[in-house]
Length: 312
Image (cartoon, rainbow, N blue to C red; front, side):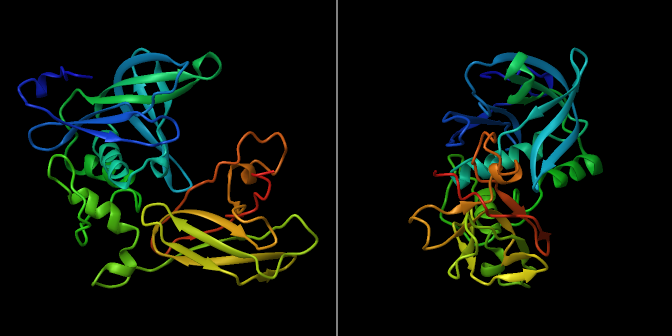
């Protein structure tokens, strides 16, 4: 995507930013193009999976899809293929934080309902049925006024894209504009760093399990915030009927939740993972931890850190 061909930007000099991403799906550089006003008008290399077929199309985003508080995909409609689901890269798995913030900003700017876009997709899996968004480009005038603002807000579920910058983190982008980076890096610890009113903490709770007849007395549950790396832990076990549960109070953010005990080998925590939501079955294909995103005052239940089998 070296040149952007839409007539509405044909006379605009474009700047671009390359972000070194370590998302698990690829180690490619995500490219973000901006017009002379600083608005993001294109993104490329969002997905670079091998063995997939490429396709392109023009159309509009008609719906957004969220899972565990994070936008996982969009419904895209064009004249050639009709409506189809496009998978997005998981923001929580993109690092460093500066790259994650830029990609989140690009999603909120471009993936607006009703916005005319050109996309390149990768068809992966059996018969290419799993479509991943590889690049997106603005080809019509930006959606304005209430509809565009509402869509951008729906994409920016806290803490993906923060609104107001907090204290300076010292991080600078290549184009000199670090406002988004300050907001993204500061949002996850807003409750601790803001001089204004304290935001209500979120609650993460779930059931405790262990591969034995009883739970170890030293069992504790921790939540690591993926941006700030701040860890919050509890060793309190709450009996609720026949189950034993935990409860964590955390600032708004995106967390990886795990349980650990000295009874287990060091470095073998039990995460809330895809193996857990798959039903702890041997046929479950993945032990990948699931990021949990919570907003101020939200209560997230059924986050069970029980994958004691990931390293076995």
